[in-house]
Length: 448
Image (cartoon, rainbow, N blue to C red; front, side, top):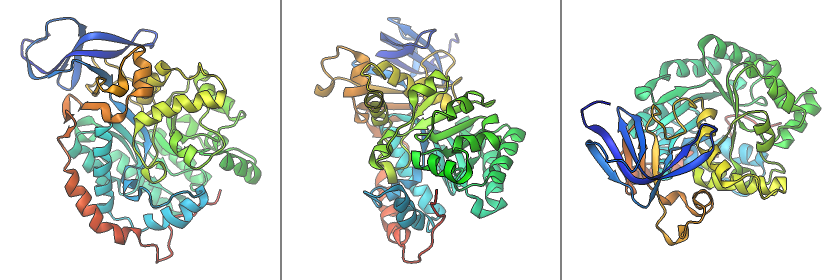
């Protein structure tokens, strides 16, 4: 303990903590001391030390910041342009024609708006898989958020796409004062061929990089892959070496029973990101098999996907929907519990993006990424079960304060790092050119 004042002290809150078995619990009247971007201590009922900045958090709950484990942040610019469509038409008729118009400035403005939405919703870190990612990295630096970024590519781009993804990952790794981590980002087994996936696995191994991709997104993809190639998308990842490196698989609602032993044998660290709102919206028949993955020890992180399919970057809603959809799918009201949902939202999500040793729990030595949630509203009172109140009664709009690396990015609902009206104004001016589909081009074809 040093004699100089702490950078930040939060007093009077109820802190969500994990015990040595990783069970979620709560400590009342907690004091959280932050120094040099790190949580120095979480103590109960102690006299707070001197600090440069203080927050009185009585009536509020301190949680580890939420992690959006798979999104396409700039796609907020496409929120609501492709509604009530099956997946194939959604991609081919609307989204991929529009994305062929994207400029780096469109991506930057979309990312800025997305970061504002996520900060206001208590998200402190997001895993993004998109194009013109230099622009996203710049927004992460400026907004103060943490992010896990990958430059997406298709085999239709030739070797250049893969090389650009590697170059991005190496250049930005450790950027924004250490708040940026990076990944190689092949789009999916149905848009990236086996040779490119195998080359990606080699590059990941050689450079110590993880891979972030879509795979077995839905049951149709798995069945079509079996029909055409005799293997599932997960088996494609195994035979191309992707499962021998650390990999974050987006969605996985098409993971079949035959895939489970394949995932169990993976030599790399496998994680899955689940974004249930989109699956409901696309009327996919199955959801991410959270229970089966848990039995394999595979962390399932919470996600939103892009706002073009999900309409929202609200991870709070993903947390509640994950609990509800799992109950409905398994026919068991005891699975998933509110405490389990909070575990997915905190430690499991941190692990999914490769940050399980530095984020995900309020404990000494962890990075000071945390949010304060106000539970004094009528919709969150009275509190009989705090975990249930947080998951099923609280909303993202109850987040009062968002802190990343010890820096306050939102205080009492006021955003401190992003000028939202200016972003909305310029994005509005650019939308007609972005939305033009008259050219008939697509960035890619969806044919699984």
